[in-house]
Image (cartoon, rainbow, N blue to C red; front, side):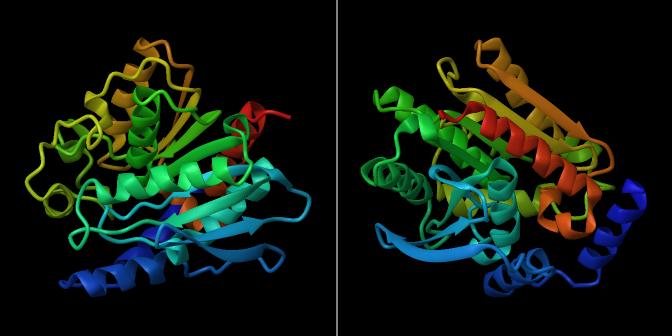
Length: 295
C-alpha cells in the first residue's frame, strides 16, 4: 500500500512541468504542495512579526498554551505559509498544540542571514508573548529543518533560552552537498537534485561561506541542544543529510531519534491526505513534540 500511494504522489509531481523562472517555481510549489487543502475544523489567524507574515493555527482540543514554531522548506527561495498550511496544522492537531508558521524572507532578494534573523525574531516574539521556552517546539522541513538547527545553535551561543525540542523533516543541513545520497538517490528522487540545490544554495549564500555553521548546521558544534526528532524518506537525495546530522547530534550527546521511512520522498508529510505513511509520520512527530513540552 505505501508503495502504490507514493506512486500516486509521484504522478502528481511529474504531471506539472518544472518552470524556469523563480516566480513560476514559487507558484508551482505552492500549488502542488497545497493541492489537498486543509481540514475545515482548523482555525487560522494571521499575525505580523518584524515585517514578516505569520499564521497561527489551532485544531479543536489543542492546548493554546503550547506552540510549535514552524519554518517551511523550499530551498530558502520558495515555499510559503500556503504551501505548508496543511502539514503545519495537522502536526498541531497530532501534538495537540497551537502552531505558528513563519513566512520568512526568501532569497535571492534576501540572502543569508535574513531568514535566520526572521526565525530568531519569531522565537523572541513567542517569548515576549508569554510562552516559556519549555512550552515551545521548533520544526521545519528541508531548508526549514536547517533553519531550525541554525536557530538553536544561535540561541545557545548567545546564552538565550532554547526550545523544548525540535522536529526536522528531510533537513537540508549541508549546503556543500557532500552526502553520497545526493547522487546515489538522484534517479529515484522526483523533487530534489544536485543542480537544482546548487542554484538555491548560490541564491541563499550570495558568496557566503557554505561551511558557516549557521548555514550548514552539519558543520556546527551541536552539544547542548534539546531533544530532536529527524524524519527522512529512503527515496530522497537528502537522506545522507538526515543520517549524518542525526549521527553528529548523537555524538554530541543530544537526545536524538532518527526515522527513515521506506519508499518516502522529500517532505512527504505535505501529501498526508493521500499517504498513510504521511499520516503515520505526523502522528509519530506529534507524540514526540507532545512528550517534550512542559505541562
